Image 1: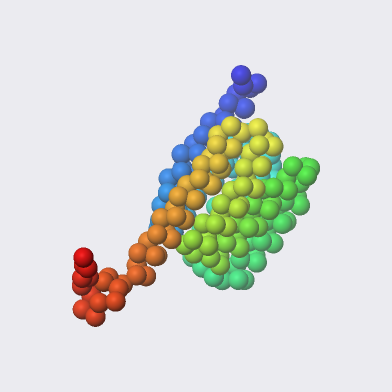
Image 2: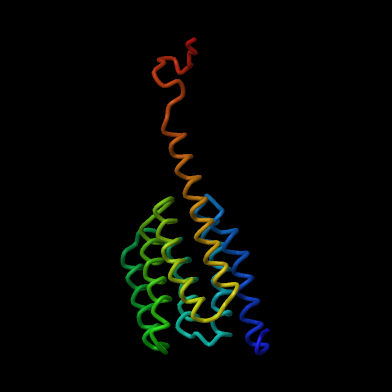
Length: 187
């Protein structure tokens, strides 16, 4: 089934990332999301290295740097631009073929979203980035990576729904239309 131990190791790290991604995107707290994504991207970097997909591997390492910087400097456009430039330079240095393009697009979308967005908007853009990462995993041949990104998209959809429902629940004052906040029931 697997051609080599290297291939098996790549699949193992893809599956490890799957578990970490599911845990990350089921969280409604942005800080937990980011911390678990650090671990997942370390596994993704190893997975892509074992599959010799060097651009995706180095960009996965830069994703870890980006997550740490986005947490420390939220909304800081200068730091965001530095990450975008570093990503473009890393992609240029490791570029092998057009198969590297989805990883670069995923990195760019993820970077802008992590620095500038929160809550629902963050997760919508992260789902878009996950779709591009999914393409990278398909091109690399990673079973775990493809499954991880598909689950990230699904988990994001679930969490987006939860956040929207929470927002709607918190926006509606209790006993709408009643001055004392108590509802009256009419027969």
